[in-house]
Image (cartoon, rainbow, N blue to C red; front, top):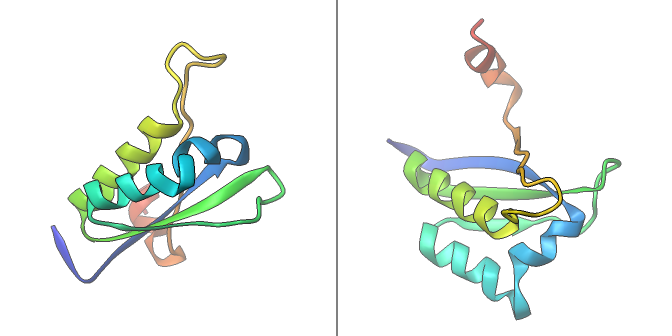
Length: 102
């Protein structure tokens, strides 16, 4: 599904996991960008909950989904302490009704 002007999605990543996404000298983030063909920007400052915003933009839903999957794969540690990955999604207010089924 292609959208005119592209699509955007924001996710929150725990600050202590950001290094796994970025990788050595930015190689991890670069790899995710190239693989998904999306632009990915990781915020510098954590919010009050200790999360950093990761903005993903790309031409199609499939590209965005690929980028989100790649980000989650890089920060998720199978067999780690919690062995789970929480995904927080940000979207514009005008889509709230569509998401919750208004």
